[in-house]
Image 1 (cartoon, rainbow, N blue to C red):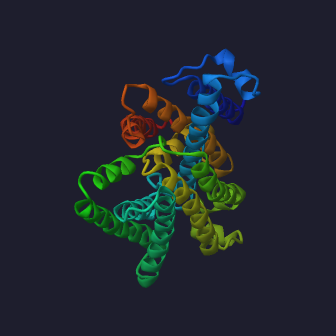
Image 2 (cartoon, rainbow, N blue to C red):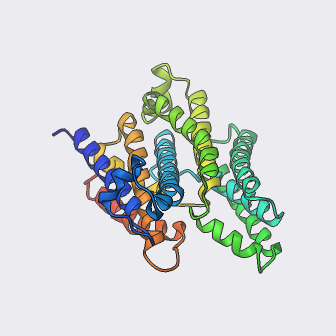
Image 3 (cartoon, rainbow, N blue to C red):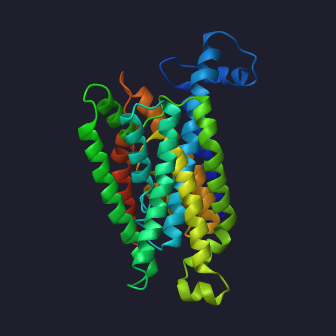
Length: 330
């Protein structure tokens, strides 16, 4: 079996196992043998109500969020030729978080809070691009863009901290803290549908561009020699990755590590070629976050925030991947 076939077999198996476990596991367990009847609409009673109104929407939300973050992370790592790049590199996550926190402090409804989170992520990337444009010509354009993202991200983080100080400590501050830790517990069908359109559009754009993005890993001069307009290509790719990241961040809150760790796992399985790496990251990202969300809602009596679990699981996994790469294993 070729490496690509083995990679897809592992990724598909992981996704199928994660979906089955998520659908069957919870405070109201559903036997795996009941799942076909539930999917076909041939079952009734409490199990059908839980399956269609609670379990299935949450599974769909986890799949969407994980796929979008992992695909965006793989694209960022490829186009910046930086294995430490992630969806929050250009301030997307910080901008979305600031927008959501501001909406909570203003007492806006949930839909408006999600809209402000999405708008905040888009505006943050626009601010990073504008800031990088002001210092154009001062060095490597990609390095300037990354540094601008780090600087603006720090500023946005300070804005979040200020709003937390000004928030009502009894109602607003707990809501802010809970959102910043990441959760899918409040995701409804309407929320998922609203986030799905921009997220799927962003992921589709990245998948369609993955052949050209592959050329960016060769370097600026080599890519231009092959006829690629590197500036325009990066701009479109960044826009697609930002669209996907901001939309799912508005849905699930600040969920870290997915866009950093999963592309490394995919690279270990299928190699660095972005033609395979991006779709493989999409599948593995969906499976990884779904497995984490299943653990988060079933590990104890109180649901563990997604951001906590992704950090707890992602840190040792990332260190192992780095150690393996250092030994020449990846």
